[in-house]
Image (cartoon, rainbow, N blue to C red):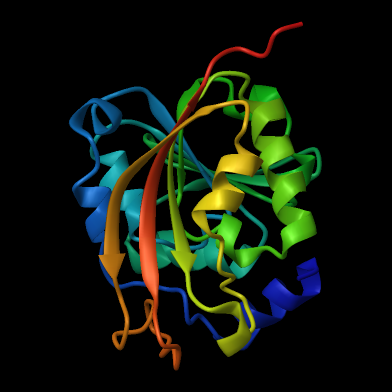
Length: 217
């Protein structure tokens, strides 16, 4: 799951995770989460969720692929300014800002106004060792946050990721510093995930609300 893997997916248009519309679990998110502050979307790709979120409050996304960032604005007929900023390229409209570059190189000041996080397919895109690094980086970027996390569960003996199965026990362990609440579940068995078919005996998509306070010094 190194950077070249994901860049190649974009270059070859292998976008099995891409959806056509905003995710139904996002649309039915808690109202006090939706109607709140700016939201940070890690590993955002060109997700239509960005447009839905931007109807509520400004959005800041992080995405590795230049193709994804460019196509997001072009396909949605949005005019964005583009400028180089250190190791990133920043694409920006009035309500959407995308940092194109390495998520793990992001700095707190780049998401300083965000208090929410939306993860639709970031954690489940990463193998176990990188999932720990991902959560550690989120906590370093935002010492206090209110996160909506979508995850998948399926029998790991029946399929290799990505997307990976991340069960409830692992979610609790990864976010042991936070309050973790199960919000909703969808049984996707036999229906697949986004554009992908899953030949697994079960497939469940789970929505978690994860909240953590400021890190104690």
